Amino acid sequence: MSSIISVANLSKTYGSGFKALKNVNLDIKRGEIFALLGPNGAGKTTLISIICGIANPSEGKVLVGGENIQTSYRKARSLIGLVPQELHTDAFESVWATVSFSRGLFGKPKNPAHIEKVLQDLSLWDKKDSKIITLSGGMKRRVMIAKALSHEPQILFLDEPTAGVDVELRKGMWEVVRTLQQSGVTIILTTHYIEEAEEMADRIGVINKGEIVLVEDKATLMQKLGKKRLTLHLQGKLDALPESLGHYELDLCDGGATLVYDYDTKGERTGITSLLGDLRTAGIRFNDLDTTQSSLEDIFVDLVRAS
Amino acid sequence: MNYRAVRAIYLFEMARTWRTLLQSIVSPVVSTSLYFVVFGAAIGSRISQVEGVSYGTFIVPGLIMLSVLTQSIANASFGIYFPKFTGTIYEILSAPISYFEIVLGYVGAAATKSIILGLIILATAGLFVPLHIHHPVWMLAFLVLTAVTFSLFGFIIGIWADGFEKLQMIPMLVVTPLTFLGGSFYSIDMLPPTWRTVALLNPVVYLISGFRWSFYEIADVSVSVSIGMTTAFLVICLVVIWWIFRTGYRLKN
Image 1 (cartoon, helix red, strand yellow):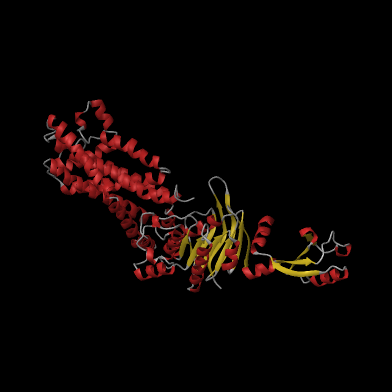
Image 2 (cartoon, rainbow over the protein chains, first blue to last red; image 1 turned 90 degrees about the vertical axis):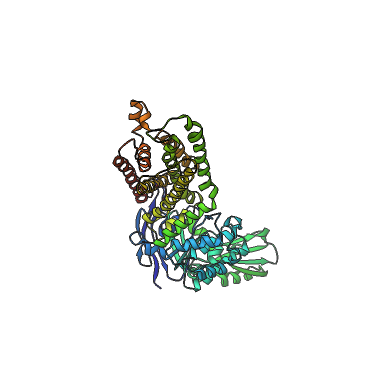
C-alpha cells in the first residue's frame, strides 16, 4: 500500500528550547486507520499541527499526497481535514453557515448536497439552523468533524476525537470513522484511550517524549508483545508454593486460593503443559482455570516505561 | 489564487457586521450625530467661519475621518483577534490559503465596513449642515486609502494583542488622541507656531488635511504630502504584515 503521508527526520524545538519532536520518521498508508498513542505532552498534537500547517517544523520534511507541506502547501493542505482536540467553534454561527464557510475556505465550489450528506451522516441535519452555542458538547464535536469533511478531504486527522465524550457517542463516532474509511478516507487519530486504538486502528504508532517508539500493525503488535495470564482457582488454599514448582514464575494470590502464571505467547514454549503436569505431581488440584490476553494498554504502558 | 477562500472570509466578516448592526453601524452614526449637535450647532454657532467655511461644515471631514480611523482599526483588529481568542484560527492556518489572501479577506471586509460607515456619516452630516464636495473622486480615494491603511494597522494590532486590554489599548490611548489632536475640530493654522510644528509630527493631520481639501479645497498641508504620508504608512503596515506571516509571529508556534 502506498504512503499518503511521509514524515522524514522531523524535529520541532519551541522558542523555550523544549524539544517537542526528535527526528520523527513515519509513513501513513493510503486508506488505513492509524492510531497515534502517547501520554500527555508526548508530541502527538505537535506532529499533527506541523503536518496540517499550524506549526512550523524546525527540521525535516513532510510530504502529503506526494506534495511538500511547505513548498506546495496548497495542494498538500487541500487533501487534509483536521478535527482539533479543543472545541474551537464560532459560537454565534449556525451549523450550516460554519460548515459551508469551511468548504469555501478550502477553495471548493458550493455544494449544498454534499453539506447536507455530511450533516445527515453525523446526525446534525436537524440542527443545521441552530447556533453552535446552543449545541451540546458532543454535537459541537460532530460539527467540528462536519467542518473537516466539508471539502471532501482524502485524509482526516482526529486529535483526541472522543475526549470527554460519553460511551454511546464514542461508539457512534467510531461508526462514523469506519464509514469514512470505507469511502476511502485515510484516518489518523490520536488518543490516549487505548480501547479506541484497539477497536479502530489498522496500525498503531506509539510516541513518547517526542520520539516514535514503535509503529506496528495492530494484530502483529498484539501478537508480538502480547502476554497471556493463566489463573488457576485451587480446590484448597496453599500456605506456600512447593519447592518443586520454584522454577516457575508463579504468584500465589487471594490468600493462597489462586495461582497466577504469566506466559509469553510469542515464545516457542509457554510452559503450560509442564506446569500442569508438575501441579498434578505435587498434588495440587484446581476447580477452574481461565486465561486472559494482555491488553494494548498493558503493552503501551510497558513501551512508555521502557522508553 | 484561492478566490473562494477570500470570498468566504470576506462574507463571514461582513455577516458579523449585519449580526452586530447596532454596534457596527448605528452606534458610530449616533455618536457622530451628537458631535454635530454639540460642536456644530451648540458651540459652533458661537464660532466664526474657518477659512471661509462655517464651523459645522468645516468639521465634517474630520468627523468622518475620526470614525473611519477608529472603526477600521476596531473592525480589523477584532476580526483577526477573535479567531485567535476562540481558537478557530486553526482552520485559517490549515487551509490552502496564502497570507496575502488571508489579509485580503479580513482587511477587505474591515475596510468595506469603514467605507460604508464613512458614507453613512457623510449622509448624516448632510442632514445637519450644507455640504459641497469639490473633488468627489479624490474624496473617495482618500476614504478608501485611509480605510485600507488603518484596517491593515488594525490587523497588526489584532495579531499582536494577546488579550482584550491590548486590543483596546492602541485605539484608545494612541489613535483617538492623535485623531482629536490631528485637526478634526480645528485647522492647525489656528495653533500657535510651536504647537503647529508639533502637530505636523502627527500622521493623522495629513489624512484629515487631504480629506478636507477634497471637500473644500482648504488644507493644512499640501495634498501631495498628505497622499505621500498616508501611502508611506500603508507601505509600513504591509511590510510589518509581511514580516508577521513570514515569521509566524503570534500565529504559529
